[in-house]
Structure formats: structure tokens, C-alpha cells
Length: 624
Image 1 (tube, rainbow, N blue to C red):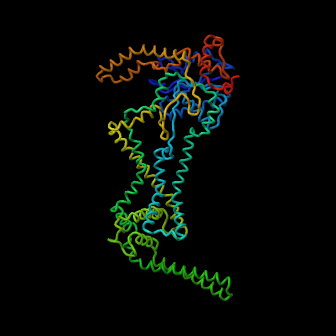
Image 2 (image 1 turned 90 degrees about the vertical axis):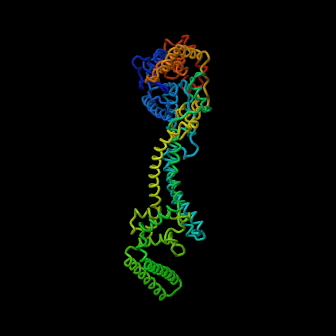
């Protein structure tokens, strides 16, 4: 058994719900059960090993790129199901139904699915939309991802501001090896969140935009282009209109046109807030005074300052003496006698005991040593200059020293943010140093990320209101939205360019329908249009004199249209086109002409037309 899959186009369900059967009192459309197209195909085409079966693929029909891609994924599942059953099939899609088929085949190319059962795929009047992905990775991210991306830069940005401040103030000594090592270590650690986010988003971007990979497109072109037949009328309104839309500039507005712009600005609020804080003397002074009085409680610790400094200096002196004694012992072990070695060992042990005793005494005399030292360290860094209190006992420079301001904010984010998570007793020793380095790298991006998302959502809500108020004044800026809407591009990471009768991954464009067949389709469409004109004129009159009392006037106008007034919607209404479609299917492997069709005038005419438009590879379709 062979199967024909039919895929309808955009707005095929207008006035009804998606269904493979016609609504009560309505004529069946070409893809629906018992339509004229289905009846002709059943009569004219057979499977090589039995009757033809029809699969009517139903999708939303929205003019939406995302909807077409979702439908393409579902269509591929159906095709793979037929592959698993060993069944041969042909797929026919009208309008953007052809785009759905193209998306399904592109996804199949990513998964390296040959689809050997696919004998031919036919698109009728399909305006394949050409898209271009944004050049920069940042522009290809969603709004929330942009916010997280910028938030990941905050730690590196603050470190950069801190470094610049240190360089301006002369705080960095690049002549010392330890200073360079410390600077390099900080630079690498502060870059980790940004590098991590960039790597993750790059991976997601490659998975999401797989249809831009050159290898994927080349694979699809090699395997599926030979089995494609593109049928289109040179005067098809959808094709001609959408292909020329790239040059159209119209003044039209959308009430939410400015929302993406303001939302994008919201992504950069964190850096703006940071630099605004740096440039606000009053705010920086208030922060310093809050840290001085409420966070560190420096006034209550100042009485212990002399004692803590003396104890710490004693410990440092003993530590230096111990290091010197160890060096002396090492020298004696290489060139001294036994007595000298014994004395050197004894001295080292004595100094170790003295150092341990001094440390214990320091902690006994100062049970709150770490908080006191942190408070005094903050005081020396930001409230004193050259060992003397700054004017007013507040932040040095009165909040006007940009370098000192950046050091203050960086100090709060790194030292104090980590202190909120780890107990003070754990700050001692190497673990404390490691925690001071690692915890900010983990905590700060998370906190800034949450803040960034909240800001984006808040600004999004405000922008919606502002946009609705300004849309009338700024509608001249929205002509780009017209092109985006007409081409159905509702993606956030791609730019719609134009439409053409050929998928982007197929190089050779098919010729239009032969003039003779094209004239028959045009004549049919013109006849319907003339018949509908009088009814449409009456509808306009009813609108003009309704005085707003008729609530569903738009629906009434649409009810006067059959949509066959357009060439784009008339292909399947012309018997001769259905002959061509039947011949295109019957000439592929697993299908054949029926007895009624074979050796008839209709098949000879259809075969002649097919030879004019068919540029595919017959061998690839399994035709001898």
C-alpha cells in the first residue's frame, strides 16, 4: 500500500476549526475527506501493490514560523512512522504547507534520516520564507537569556572598574611577582561566570538553529532536492506579494511595537545602576556610613584597636622569626656540625611553641577577633588616608573618588557577600582564602541574575503601557513589523528577508506552470472574482449604512468571499491541475496510473506539462 500525505496551508481553517472533514454545509477543501482533489487522485492514481491511502496532516495554519516548525516536527514523526512500517509515500503541501514539509525534511537532515520511503514531495504555490539569523550571539538570545548574559558580566565588569581604580590610585604594584599572580588569578576567576554562560548559550544556540548549519543544508539538498517538485503560478498573489515585500516601507503601527526595544534596554539596567551608584557621592557616603555604623559597628571596636594591632604584630614578628629560624636550620643541615643542628632544631621548636602561644593568647584576649579585624580593615581602606581619619570620619573623598567608590562596591560584593554564607570562624587559613575567591564567583551571578530577570519583567510591563500610548506618534518606525508579520516570522533570533518559490537549501528554482495550464487557473479565478464582485459590492453598501450597529460586519464581508478569487487558492479547483498532480505522483516509484488515467488524452497532456516543470532526479525517486 502507498500513502499520499496532504498538508494544508496558512489560514486554511478560517471560519472554522482544524479538521480533516468539511464543516456542515461547506464544500470540502482540497486536502479534506471526499474533496474533488482526493476523489480524482483515488480515481487516477494507484499504488503498485494496492489502493492508495490518504493521510490528512492537520496543523494550526497560523502565519507563524514557530507554528510551521512545530508542525514540521510532527510531520516528520508521521513520516518516520510510515518508514518503520515499510510503506512508500508521497507528500503534497499547498502554500505554507510546503514550508511545513521543508522544515520536516531539514530536521530529518539533522538526524541523518534518509526517508527512503519518501518517493516525492510536492509543493504548490509555496512562498518559502528566507530568514537570516542575527549576526551576534547576544542578539540571538531570548530576552531572559540576554538578561542572564549581562548579569554574568557584572562580576567581571566590577573587577575591571576596581582594577582601573587601583591603577589610577597607584594601588597596584606590577613589579612584584605576587601582585601579578594575584591579579591574574582574580581575572580568571571573575571571568568564569561569563565564560560559562557564553558556552552554555552557544551550545543551545547551535541546537536551536540547526537549520543554518551548512552541512545540514548540504545533506538535505543532496538527499531530498532530487525528490522535490515545485508547482507555482507566475501570478500567484502570495508568492509575488511576499517576494516583493522586502522593498516595501509602509506607515503602520502596532500597539506593542516598542515593547521589544524597552525590554532590551532593561537588560542593561544592572550596569547602568552600577555606574550611577559610582557617580553618586551622597549614595556612596551613605553606603560607607551604613557599613561603618550598622554592619561593622566600628565605633564599638575602636577601643580594641591598639590591643588587636599589637597582638597581630607580635604574631607576625614571631612568624617571621620562625621562617628565619627554619632557613638557618636548613643551612646548618648542609654545612654545620651536630651541635649546631641540635641548637637550630631547638630554636625552631621554641619559636613554634611561642607562635602557638601568641595565637592562643590573641584569641583569648580578643574573642571577637575576626569581626574586629574586618571592621578595622574596612576602616583603614575606606575611612582613613595615610593612617589618619578622613574628613568627617566618613568615606574618603566624600564619595567623589571614583576609584575608591569602585573599590568599596567590589569589597561589598566579594568579601561581605561571601561572609553572609560562611561563618567567620571558617575564614581562617587557606580555606578562608579559597572561600573568599570562589564564593563570589558562585553567589554574585545568581543574585544579579535574579535581579536582572525581575527588572526585565517589570520594565516589560511598563513598556507595554508606554508603547500603547506612543504607537500613534511613532507608527512610521513599524514598517519592519509589517514585513515580519506578513512573512510569519515570530522568532526572536532571526530576521525575515523575503519569500521565494524555492527552499533556501535548494539552489535550482523550478519554472512556473506552463502557460496553457496557468491560463486555465487564471481564468477560473477571474470567473469566481466576477461572480463575487456583485455580492462584495452589496457587503460594502451594508457596511456604509450600518451606522456601527452591525457587530459582526467583518464576518459578513468574509462570508461573501470564497477565497477562490485568488489564483493562490484556485490551483486544486482546476481539473487539469489535478491531472498534473496525479501524473506527478503516478510517475514515482510505488505509485502508478490507474486504468482510467493511463493512455488517455488527459495523461498525455499532464505528462507534457510535467516534463516542462519537473527538474528533479528520476533515479532518486526510484523511477526506471
